[in-house]
Length: 188
View: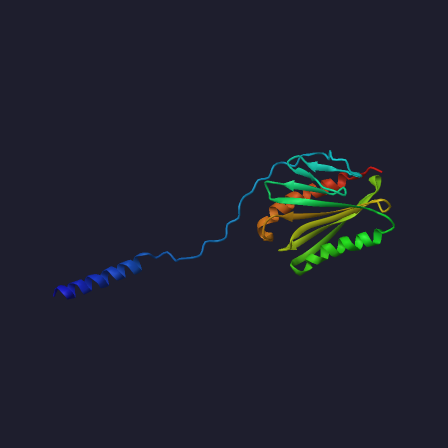
């Protein structure tokens, strides 16, 4: 009698436990951080170079050899690496090299969106490339005066590429790159 009672009690408890919770167990949707970035403010580049442009005030400039620069964003764990090369009857070679570096990311890129840039007043001609997908660099650009100067820049994050996660930061830094290109002047 006691065993039968214990058996019924176990069956009733089992039914109560398995049927009492009616909520379906569903995976939680992915959440995205709501990031707020400081308002873009700019100052003149103070490092002596054959070029001049405006840089974000919240960035750190790393002076590198050969007139190269690194514009670091410590809070975003990112940098814009800028290389400079004088044009010495090799403009076609410099442009080809810059485009090769852009399209090297085509393996991981979903799309590469070019945007031409022309500023006749300051003799600045170039292109900005937005690279979507999990590529190593999401923004690349080059600019030249076609006769003496050529710069190339690439945006890098110090993290594994996950385009969806860093998209807001890419959009934020893209505004800084556009400001850089708009304010670019050659010094020679």
